[in-house]
Length: 50
Image (cartoon, rainbow, N blue to C red; front, side):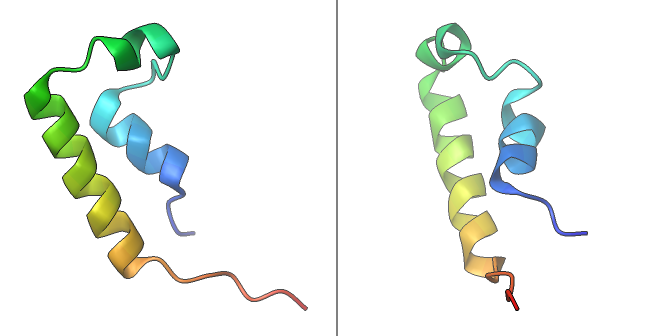
């Protein structure tokens, strides 16, 4: 099963995805997150529905 964007966010940021956690991100963490999101969507394929 393919990882979702939420799975990827938890891999990079850890389990706490609260607004408070996001407000405390460092510049390096934001850069890492941006790279991870870009990489995720470069390989992402939409699920075909019937």
